[in-house]
Length: 413
Image 1: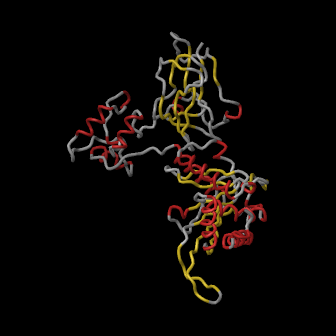
Image 2: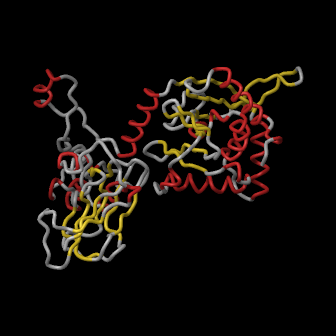
Image 3: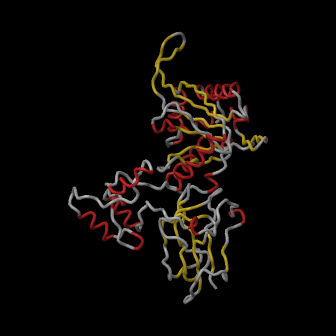
């Protein structure tokens, strides 16, 4: 009897995923726990194994297709068996904690199999070759099934003489409805690009954050001379480069303990002051910022914290963050200085009450012992939820963080 395998919620509150690559074709044999399909979510790319051994009777969606959580991902049966979509099947369902009560209808074909129209279909080997050749697959006309770009299509594209007109692009940008007829009759001036799962999730969360949380942002700067020297000393002592986030977190911990409203979650009229200090670290994942979570940072030595941050940053950039590593932050730190940023207006992640960003340190004139000196001054931007934290408390928190960063020798290691 055929076994249905539905797309599970492999992230916290995941609603959909994009099919990246099938490792088994319909009619092919699979072993239990053999990698069957690769999918991309808003946080990571994962390979999903076959839940049982047998023959793959049905693929719930093609490569480049968005599939809703709870929709049929695959059907596995016995050799010679066929599947007609009937209900007389066994189901490999997600674990109870993965089932998501959602606003979508898993039975709706329109939602479950909405194609990513503007992400060209191509096998990974074709994508890799196109990338190496500097070719945008959107410029290549596909002749395979459903417009899939084959090796031959790519070869033909590469063989075209320079300056040859490109094939028409799908998806003309139309500014107004009145312009529709003229645009369709003229040369394409642009193309539509579907946001990746990561960008869609970022857009949704930031829109909700901005609309649901009354943001207040306060600014300060500090003399980074001592913390930068401490970083250099630690790097020598530990024999490895120490991320600045490790020292920043150690300076923030006492302020979070003194002002627990910044390490909290507001739900309705209930404010939960967290005992755990699980600090989110914003990481540039290539397709947008991801937040990796360092757990119980107050219990880690500076060396162990540095090691954990390096691990999390590496996992975020390789899109291999686990659910544990990507959820549950109680406060967030964003080092926008790593990409050349200064002051900013960081948006508060949902489920928290504050976020602190540090910008790039730059030399400035400062007063020291009645004289003018040059020192590396680093900008700080603190955004907080005004429903929970007022201006006076915001300044108190910022003042304590600034003092700890200016003179880190007194901060617990």
